Amino acid sequence: MKKSPTISRMFTILFIFTYVFTACSGDDDTTENMSNDTGTTTDNTTSPVSSDYDITPILTKFSAAGMSYEVSGSNVIFTTNDLPDHKSPYYLDTEWESSLYEAYNGSNSSFNLNPNRIAAQNITITIPLYPAEASNKEATALGTMGIAVNGVVFYNQYAGPDNQPLTGEINSFDQYLGHPQQQGGYHYHQEPVYLTNKFGNDAFLGLLADGFPVYGPIENGEEITNADLDDYHGHIGVTEDFPNGIYHYHITSEDPYINGNGFYGTPGNITN
Picture 1: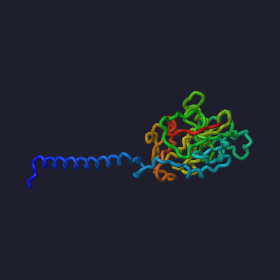
Picture 2: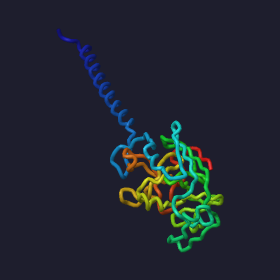
Picture 3: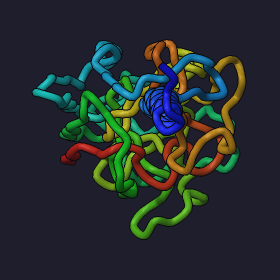
Picture 4: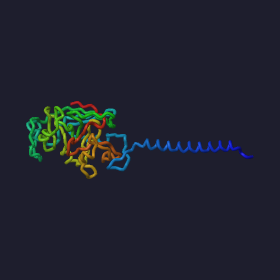
């Protein structure tokens, strides 16, 4: 029995519609899978970088006297007396002078001992264990913005009280590039060379209050410059402590030294 032209055309149209629908459905699935691939790569790794960060593995590196930490829920709470475990000319005329005083022996011919002396502090920093990028980046304030592995706190690239450049203060940095403020709180604005000499220029040095780690000025055998980093003085990449990758800050030899225009993540509470 011969099919009518009308029926033939109907089968043809149905076949074309089914083919196009199936092909388009396959393309949509492929596109969706690609858009769900959130892995990123950086210059120093060709592997996907995880977006799920957990800093618990590096907490054991904080083991200095005068500092302690406890995990509380999704945070780690650091408490420190902020006393450097290395010698300094700022231990002059203090109760620790006999064992920790050392006259300035650094390379800055313009060094000038400021009138402040090191004194014990009571600083508490609550830091997220699972740091994440903040949708609204907060500027770092004057004062404590993080903590080094030896319990000394990090300050940003400004001098008080009005966010002045460090130009004048730099001449009061001791041989380990730290100094005390008026209340005796010792801190680092720049590379803590006592720690990089001890652990290496590529070593993990501490955490900022947003939970992201701070590393030294060397990565993969190369010196990091400001041009290698984003506005917040960090980038995403693999480190020895985080083989799946993590956002991390680097210390550089130029302003802003430790941190740039603010925290990459959301900082926890800081009590001085």
